[in-house]
Image (tube, rainbow, N blue to C red; front, side, top):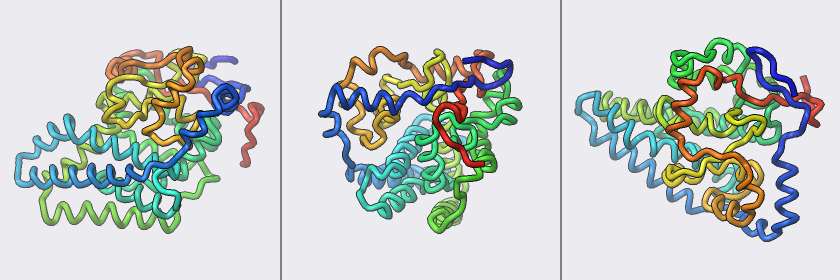
Length: 322
């Protein structure tokens, strides 16, 4: 493995999860019992969406800066939970019927201002199948993106604030993944239609609450460290990391990322059980205990940047069609 100046780390080795999955199943065949769907996640979606809408309505007519305060301390956690539930729907972990999972994801997307549930599904499933492959993994920053942001505090703070924009721009390099389909259009109509209705009936402060909840849930907030925690090479050469802190409670165990990649068919409520069932496989891996500390490290450590990712060559066993 070689490290190039101002470049990603490159590896000819296959991603680590498929091999570990086989080892865990051999040592603990009872893990198969944890593979299941959780339809109660749909009720949680309805509760969180209703709560966010209620808070936004209560803020109607208030000073706009209340949207920032409540968005930081409350809305960010609610919207982040909805992102996790969209993730569950993307893996068909709520219902057996795929259409119901599409619908669940779109409903969870309602307070997120910018529609992304259906698009996320397409790109995220490729991330699991082709982890680290530049042409297919939307989780990797584009080369121009990493060069533009660099290692400065200002650049990385800007990246966090504009994270949805940068992610959307990555789609242009992932030419094998279908960007538009009927479900994407439905997603757009529902979310943008909801945005318009909120502005029309309840005013700009109510809408700004959704904007700030969305923005803080994915960046320039300790919750934003989740995106750093998952695959940034904070302790190379390990390329996937879990987080075992208290914020896993409101974040619905999304920190259990090694466990999720090893068994993407295990729903969020069983990820803790998965780790407890096979501790000898997970306790030896490096993990994070604080999203807040990791967030600060990302912002202020010039050696930790968008280049701090493992990129896998075709020789690692992945075939890429160009």
